Image (cartoon, rainbow, N blue to C red; front, side):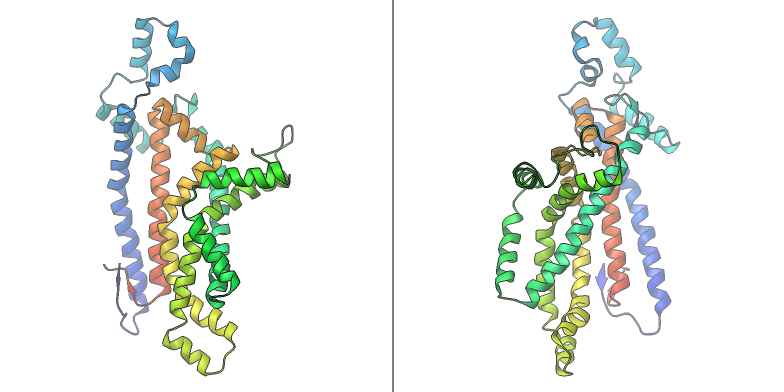
Length: 337
């Protein structure tokens, strides 16, 4: 990405540049995803966990060496890593995601059962973080030096170093065990049917924890960007015309501050994915987090590779959307570089 002024009267050129940006990123994503997926197979092969032990469980102690060798061959665990990867990849191209040994079901079924809940939690947490960051960051910059500014800035710097799972445990201790306002974990109460009310009630605390865990960087960035925007010439001109301070801040300064905010938001996608996995584990949310842990312990190649590809795709997509938004929002940004 490079920054320069676009020539006047060429609106079509920007759309063409965005299209080429998307095509270039998609072309670059293919080898990246291939390398990442092959790396998963290499790491799984180097793992101290033996998949055959996970497959047998405690029955491994009663199985003969011949039976273990036979099952290992049936599962393809006696093949070299490149051949395992090629078998998995050729199936992936044809739409066959394989069968998860650790879950004892097709990978497609694992994703169909768990991925929607992860997407719900991640999207809710992202929306919470964005709204909280924009509101808190705008107010702190608008009232710079006030008690709210000092409090939020101090909290932001303090929360930057706290992992999401620590925030989750503190939230459970306060709002669930202490005050009894929200459920501790799960998707519904024990014995309750799956309904929108139950899901929303159990979603509130994980969403808040995930959003708050991502908000410190965003709040501080909005504050800093807005403070810089308030010193620019067009904002001074708006004030000179006698506009109200609210109009100056919200309509003239804030839009300028949103461009770097979008870029930072795209860069936070990897942390958002990691945070969602940790929050799911603490709150026993029925997403892909437990599947990630189980697949890693069992060196479950098909499931582990697909989950890693999904996480990598989310990171690449977040970066792409941030760059596309920057090109569309600011005419000075070129997608040619």
